[in-house]
Image 1 (tube, one colour):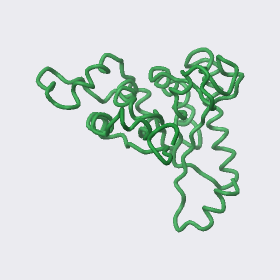
Image 2: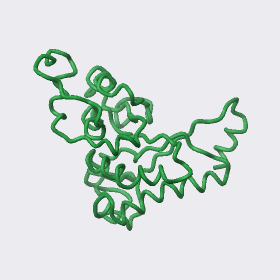
Image 3: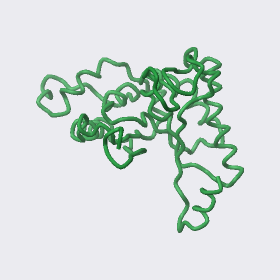
Length: 218
């Protein structure tokens, strides 16, 4: 908080801050640990998911007391990391379907019914190799390519994700898609970001994490 306040004091314009939680408290998690493979107990709409959504609101409330407001929050940092056994960093696993339902039933309504309803909600916040599949699950505003469109470069990839149902309720709470640039060699821009923007032009694409290289060890 002091560092953000110091930065804000010398900034020529208001800072646009976003927050991204890495894990929930361990008592909410299936593995009872900060690291390793684990997700929220139960299912969207239950006491664990409602409680985790309330943590977002409490976080924003507490920072606001220090005159720090946020432009956006993500639904969680690298949700696929929490599906990896023995993952060494803090993580909380979500599939795209699980994230979609958590947003629709818990996080979206919690934000909308709070004093932070103006905050942008960002999905994915993970490797861009997950696109466009992850966005396909969460958004209702895409359409599967028909036979006449199969020659288009984005169509072949999209066919694999069109079978997943979309949820207009979840989509109504979402503003954008967060991406990490690792695995660039597996996920070139034309097959991930370009396709996703073509399918979802109303959602912004934002790079939310990077390091010195596109490999995990850099």
